[in-house]
Length: 502
Image (cartoon, rainbow, N blue to C red; front, side, top):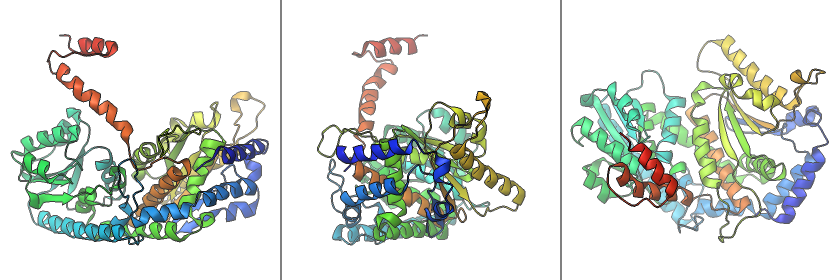
């Protein structure tokens, strides 16, 4: 865990480096070449992080002192690392056999059996008259599959998949308006099958279809699924050892398997398994996920940067920042440690982003000349899946130019045209945007998040912070449906009155 003494040393390094421009650090050709790492189809260059060899040694010393490797092994093997809920954390068992504990082996077999059932149900649907799938879920039951489909969906897929997440019925209305109920099936995804938004949207979909005969469910609560009217032979499992934001590899990804095909889904799992093995075996200095986590910690704690932006120069990765936002902020947005004591250091920065080159025409002004610097992650794809080479060259030129300009800046006698530079960034390059490379990339982010949680001393795998708002909403809903109930909060009471005016 990050101790006050270690934090002070990191901050001293950061203060020392404030006197040295980032462009000067990056001028060394050896650094530009050597501060990089490849794992399968992924390449990471971290030469533009505002770190020198001394500061990097301090960061790696923190990883060694925290015994990151042992912490990861406990997670992979199925130890109870989710301490507040008394659960193992075994999403890696959905795609690899990196864990060697009995719990991990059991989970791996359950995952293999569930994948076989996913394929069986998919083949049954493939010979039906169904052309459209409506996927109903929210949070981790929505963001992962939505990202996969947006990134990888091939033209002419057997099934068209549509998503309904928001309890705002405008979304469902717009999705269903273009579909034929006679040629549509639905997939409802909720571990507890008690998520209010999913049940309301699921009921709306069931009524639109006419009955539940073409509804499928992904859940751990068979009794509630049966009460909803979905037969047991159309239910795929979830387990308490997989958190929602880590679940796209499971039956939560059933809709993605239907649209992408079995081979592509297998390649996705293969890419993730490749990253699992790398993270399990590599020493911190050569471990992509550990280095990624250490630079995030450096920017947050040593340099005091309160947000991080991810800019993917590929339109197909438009959904990546939203998926990452949940992964990072729900996992790491904690201010108490495992022992329930308040932490003395900052944790989760705000994670946000978009795609280049469109974002250059919106918020990049603030990145270049705003009052604060913040760390960036640039993502590029070397080879596109189209033949418009000039456009791809222009896209990549913008990718490289923005990273360079933000780091180096530009001097000018005209203050309006002065660029301060000094913006730290990493560059992630994919050979192609394939199921394998996307699987490796997303698994890397999962492992980096777990490492950060360990270094910060927080439980990465619970999310108690989402419960209070849900509980208050449940109490308020009757008032907004016209019932006379006591509303204790004065401001809320006033707002309820405004909302109920004729």
